[in-house]
Image 1 (cartoon, one colour):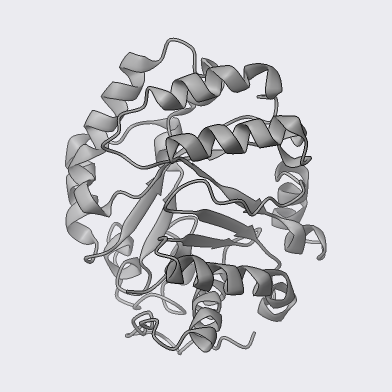
Image 2 (cartoon, helix red, strand yellow):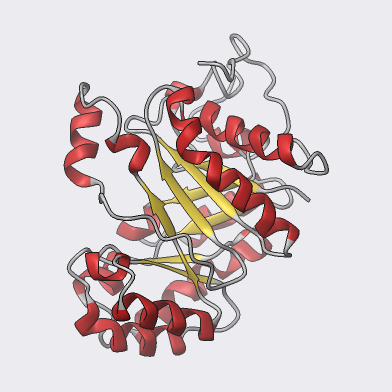
Length: 285
């Protein structure tokens, strides 16, 4: 068994050649991606639930052991703010259920304005979620990252229900340059919050937002490498997603993170090597 590592998308045409086979056709990126990574963060479901035929195609495209981490629709989390959404949640999970074993935790990403005053609503909502699925919550309100009573109540509630709290770490990005259009956009949109590495469920998820250069990120992710390896040894199933502002080099960073984990624990299976590339990307960028 290895650690689940991946990126925030799979259909990035900039990756064809450097990271995916040069003959990867448009629409065939997922199959190619799943041969070299074992997890992906899916943002598409935040905006619309894919039709059944699309989900069937995605399920059939990926390798065994692959995990999709999809977001709940924004109608549930942002528009209705978890109010009166039982039927909408039921319809969503029924739609994505055909993904079967390839479905990882479903992400409940909440807006930054969702704060302590709504915590009871969140915990009531999570207590009513279908138990046949794994769930993970991402909070962005500062009070849930301050180490006080509100954060303890959140963590205790999620732990009691076995629901993961997603770790969001943007320190590396904000410590780096803000030069390109993509970096400026990320600086203006990404949360800059204290990092909370608490484990409340069985599949802890880390979303690491880094800089363009790999070595600039390594000092920031080194503690996560140690912790992720320990989580796996403790019987947990961690999932790590590596982002950059433009995500062009995110695949190299994701593979480097996994190799850093293997440097600590040689029993980890390596990720499959990419084939059919223009040139083999180096991990030493």
